[in-house]
Image 1 (tube, rainbow, N blue to C red):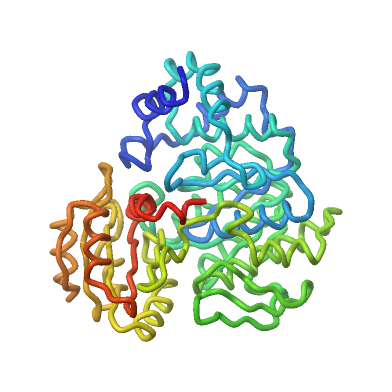
Image 2 (image 1 turned 135 degrees about the horizontal axis):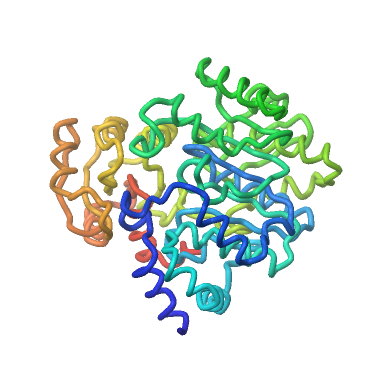
Length: 435
């Protein structure tokens, strides 16, 4: 098969959660371990850092990768989901996996794929581990998919585990309470391996993580309690100014209220990594904090797509993310004459919870992303209207964005989001934003 045929094969023969949702979910590690054995256990050839959490995984993973890359290491980065090209999930020093390697890997493992029917995510994980060995990376930053304990990435034995945050999402798979979800995320904690926890605001969760870490002799750090940042201020555009204990002043390119906590996690990780004889120069940290998007290809997190009218997109798709985005949204509504919200949400999300966190003094362009997981736009609009969100329905993201731009003046603000897949559809309308 050539590359195009390989992609068509993957789409048709491996169930993908990002496309069809529940029917693609295959918990358990048996297929992942079998694929790993078939490839000769490639993940044992380099050091890994494992990251789980409801929100913040992507920001932390990309920032850590950028720092290690700036420090002179060859760094593998495995994340999900993708926005415009599934090869975004597998990068080495910011460069996506080659089309040829994808084709060769699938061809080499086609008998296993046909007989064992791995999920899309299981196959991508195996491909990433194999590619990182091929590229001779020294470190690989590995982000879990949905959970942790039964996630296909959980066959690795990392030098550091990180759990960024816990909030209600994917409750039909991970559990309907914060404690149950924490139990799944905590599955990545390994015996004698240090673990960093992002936001232990909930005392019950804090005690759970302490107990879990003690049980398997894992040194535990709560990032918000670590002495890493002496002063932090979010700028008008959502970026950050940090005065740090170890690295002086850092300018954080990543935007949004959550980025202070993400920075604390990353700086806590650097303290632990430096204790393992890793040398990280001040210039590397400063460069990575201020240029992480360019260095790693990071996209879709409060990203500006256009100016006049100002157009921002964000992939936040649960109430935890929207609690963080709310402050930025309110700030933009104050800075601009009118606010236009292009919104679509997946049907397996807490739709009412997400909509309840959106500004009422805005014009809404309700839409649905391409793919089976999208909530039908009419149903979304009805739920929005019940919460006093006024607007019209559009059958595609392209139609919704086009109408919002048509109605907006240069002094207005347009937001695009509610779902990763809405942002993915919108990106094709702004090709210069794709990294």
